Image (tube, rainbow, N blue to C red; front, side, top):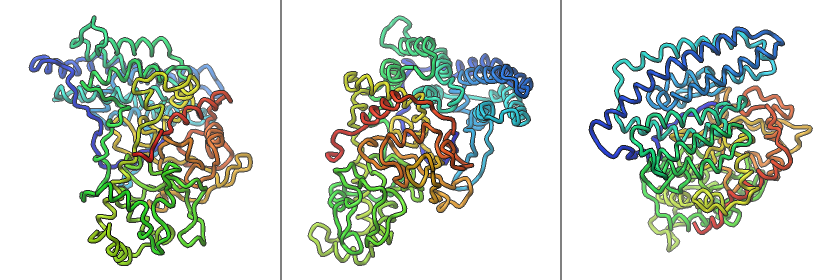
Length: 575
């Protein structure tokens, strides 16, 4: 239910693992094994697509029985797909796209190529649309594409070859999808089949790795696979599934074994900062920290970075929108926080620059923010003992270097995921499961950063259209007139589009949203619970957030806020 914005990048997790303890024949067997496995599973999946098409063709207007049968067929088809997803998603991404692309237009940057919504997610969106009966022709066309593509999948194996390292990496990436996408309902938010899909994916991994594992040894890959499959299979209800227990007790120990490392997805070192956009010039972190508080960088020498990004306020300013440098006007957008800003492929709410160095330069040159003249700034700095001889490139690089240190990973949640099971209260754990489940928060705020970095490669930044109102009155909402990314990329699908920020430290950084419209978390949750802009009565044709109400209870909302409080870093200033 979102579109993709593609950026250059690489897989940023350490996905080189030693699963096999010997070389030669065993490695060849793993490569051969994936081919044999796919040959067995492909006809099963192809038949599931045929059954889905049959039930779609049998849809009758007003007949709820035929609609429920079609939805059940879709569920079975999705589960079957997840049995081969690790193979297709890694080795044949274009075919995987046909089956499981988001149910919205995809936009490939910088070429601005549009891709029509297609596949299982689009069928889900249509089957759950109130006007479902009017979509029968499109549903039939979508199903036919699935059937034809699924039946031809066997041709992919012609002259196919893969190394054991590639197969291993495909399994690694699938485990990350299980932890961050499947159990959160990312690609089946209405069907809520994510737990069963995760079980199918883990069974596929288990089948692939069984010949190489000690079947009796506890604390082994086999042990955690079996324990995870058991939990997913015996607790299939999406809303009540205990995701935190699954992660801590099964998935993360399994990942550490697969990585042959003490690190996992929630380790502070899991995502490498140096793969995100940055300039080649090396910055001085200590110098950058001094410059962060240096008012000489502004045109009238009255404002520093810390004026608006106050460390004691978790690098925000606590205002709905700050004022311009002269104080004569209000800035157009809410001041975003800087914590974890290094883990992004674009900066600013509209993503108009990529690197932190570019962000520093843009803010300094903005007439409303710093209004800096380069020659004047350099003249001032060169007359100060700490900055003699400094260049503007060094200013930008050093400030960016300092910003890259602002990633504490020191919240109660981080301690819990690292093994301290007493770090979270029962209410916070319940809230975490709602965040990653019924509340659908984690379908846009992806673990472990809880921002718009899309797993499993974390090489794309997501933008969303939420339909945020101009003010916090949800009963009589007024449309926000900010065009968002449209002003930077003038294409219709970007109207009202904004980058998905991290929700780490959100409990202490009110107000919220790009315009600061919501004063507290209760208002934010209420907005999402009602289905975003469309849900509260605004007309947002390109909204990427589902307009279906979440049906959260008061108790669940309270628990969700408790979990958000557990994402607060203990001492961000020290970092």
